[in-house]
Length: 80
Image (tube, rainbow, N blue to C red; front, side, top):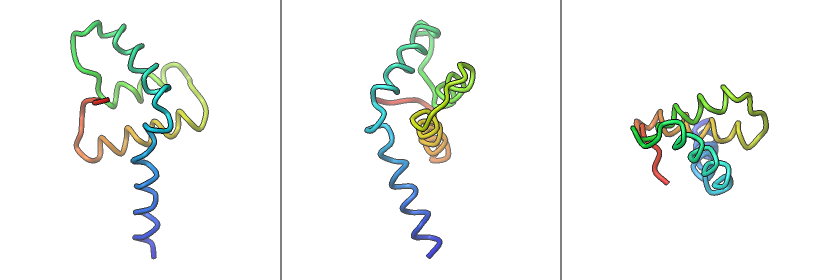
């Protein structure tokens, strides 16, 4: 029973960028300006920017969860 609930949670996390693509694109553009193309954007960069700017809301929380999920899968760099 517990395993089914965990799998359902992961399915929800996987589709987060579809729901928040505009927010993700906005954050990506901010980070592109900060890094000026010197390096690729990492999932941890997205989390750090959200926290540093003090962004609050369900969309930001979901984006942080999604980034954390990608990091736990072993992925490092953002690909959209």
